[in-house]
Image (tube, rainbow, N blue to C red):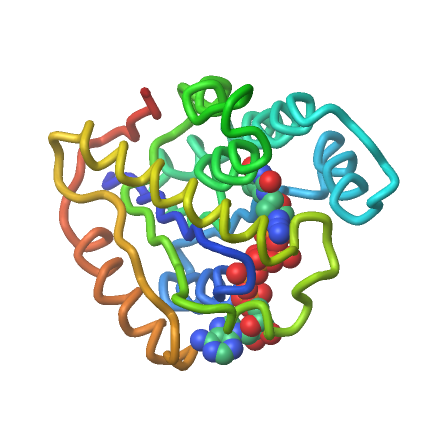
Length: 217
Ligand code: Z5A
Ligand code: MG
């Protein structure tokens, strides 16, 4: 049986990751599942949810980083099983959000190398789509500013970290291009969905290895 593909949406706040994940899920159904990180329904996810919503709930930044990673490990076996049984898994955020948001807090003490280590060994996405925007259009969208990290200056540093991590990934990869940047500025939901489908269709159509690979840095 052909294994399922792991398709990841990453991106800045309110760039449409959840919107596009849901559209893609509908397109790939019934052979697909959506997993969103943080997965707030688990034990660790509940702590993360409280941390994001309650700005008086303090934890060391290193501990927060490890909680986000642990939350991915809580779901890793499920992701592997789904892929091996032939189900596509759409991810709404994953390891690169982990790196970008944490490294943006402390570019020195928690650099990108430090941040990537706890995620080493998680299933590696077959395709990563990075939704970005030129300006602050996304900040005007519904919901921006409600949770802890939703501040303009911090988002600029997060964007820089995302760009750097994807650049490093591309420099180190001898394989086909795994990360695609999609600029959503001025594009409707439908226009973005079309660009996304043009990227996803070949990945889900072509035959692939019988097993997933793991993230190695
Ligand atoms: N975080 C972390 O620090 N470390 C980690 O390891 C992980 C996450 C995994 C919560 O994440 C926080 O966790 C996040 C990163 C951190 N911090 N921040 N800030 P989350 O994924 O739960 O965040 P969220 O609350 O779902 O927001 P979001 O994901 O940033 O939004 P989005 O999914 O990208 O956007 P959306 O919900 O699809 O769309 C937002 C609005 O825009 C909505 O009203 C849409 O209808 C509208 N929209 C969407 N597309 C368009 C277009 N093309 N045109 C016009 N309007 C649009
Ligand atoms: Mg979202």
